[in-house]
Image (cartoon, rainbow, N blue to C red):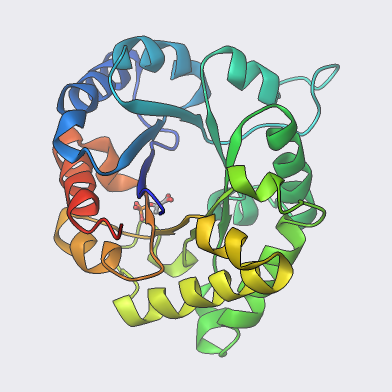
Length: 256
Ligand code: PEP
């Protein structure tokens, strides 16, 4: 059984009052989507504020990035232990904006994934192809390379805490959502890779989220797909009503 995970990536948005209000708005309505796990990933400076606004509601706390070293002279960086200390249980790694704007490589993502697991965080490892890669028929190859590189050395046991997210870069923040067929093809291929690299049990257990312009009106079709186990949401996660509507769709599509 894979409980759908609905994760909101707030990116570099909100300020103190709006982060507090958004978290409180989501927390108040979390009970509406009992079949799904909810997660919010605010900017790191607001993690403590959001943690307090969530209180005892059934909403998890995640970060959007971390550094791979545990501590030391790394000015401006934040470690996995620090994220745990402030109450985060998840961390998004290898988001396309970090890969393509901040030049993160699969090797960087891999080091962070290893460090996140060591710190007791659940990494959400993102993969996804550029539009030109899809148009060149290279989607499967690109995803396979990112999968192999980002998860190098991660044992079957450690994979229990890993979540994968397929986010076609051309669908992020563009309003162009992958068709259900496009999403299912990549998700099924990722599951096959999990089975080949690890075993059937790991493949059955690991959740694979879809991300890229998920909105309340397209969430139902995507979340009903056999190999889609939730969503990583950018824009729509900044409105409590939209985020909850997507979580309710996930709850309704629950494949248990
Ligand atoms: C994201 O940033 O992970 C994302 C999927 O953004 P959006 O939902 O806005 O496309």
